[in-house]
Amino acid sequence: MSEAETREVLKHASDCVEGECSLDDVSELLYVLKDTEKELEDRLEKIMNMVSHLQHINQKEERKTDEVRAFVSDLLRVFSNGQAISFPSGFSGDIPKGGTMTAYDALPPKKWSPKA
Image (cartoon, rainbow, N blue to C red; front, top):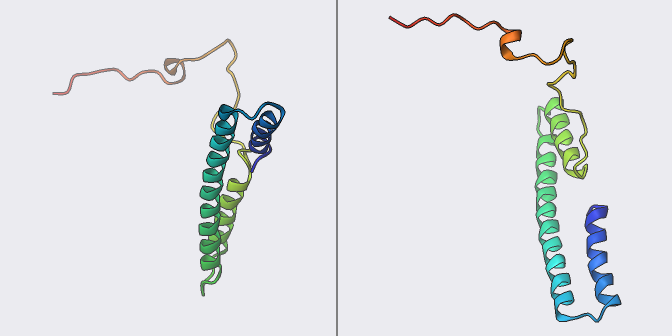
């Protein structure tokens, strides 16, 4: 569980303890706990599948290092708690001089001609 998820569960539990533990407080705590339980069961199932798959690709006669490396990279992504391992690329961050450019500035449009 991430720190935020743990804090949320502990907050609901401490609110119940500090308050009167009304029916609403207890039912909300139960809802949070059941929701957390479902998320953790889903994560555990994914992890068990990953372990099985990693064992399978590691025991192949012709073990492909690239395949194992790619799988371990995917596995890292699961445990990173939403933190990006690598930065997405595509936009270089360069802004042209003189302001913004349109598609027509970058590539002149082709002359339209009706098809015969």
